[in-house]
Image 1 (cartoon, rainbow, N blue to C red):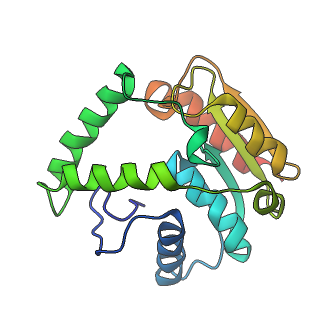
Image 2: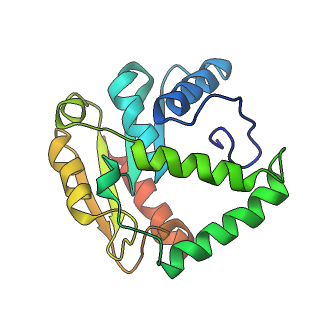
Length: 191
C-alpha cells in the first residue's frame, strides 16, 4: 500500500505521523476484511510495521522491518549525501507522475522532513512489548540509519532476528531486488 500522501494515495490536512499512518493500515485491513497480516516495511514502512506490532499486536502475525530507526537521532545527517539526493530527485519525479496533487511535492517533502525530525519515539519499553516474530533488517552500506540504532532495535525486541544484507544500502530493494525478495520469502517461510 502507499502511505498517505505517497504514490497514488491522497491525504487530509492532519500532520504526518507514524501513529496516523499505522491507523491507516488498520483501516485498510478492516476495509479488505483482513483480520491479521504480515507487515513488510521499508524505512518509514518498517517503522509503521513496528508501531503496529506495539499498538495493534492482534492485527500482526510478523514484521520484516528493513531500515527502521527508533528515534530521529538514529539517522545520519543527509544534507550532503549524493545517493539520498538522487533518491529525493527520483521521488519528486514519481510524485509528479502519480500523485493526485502533482504540484505539491515541495510541501509534502517539507512535512515529511518535519515528521522525520520529531519521530519516531520507539522506546526500549515499547519495543520490549513486541511478541510477534520480527526481523530487523538493514544493508551493510546503510547511509540513512545509524548502525547502533539498528542494533538497539534488534536488542530491544524480544527474540527478534537481525539480518544485515551484504553489498546494499538503505535502497536494497532497488539495488538487489532478488536478494531482498529471497530474504522476505525466507522470513515468511519460518514458523
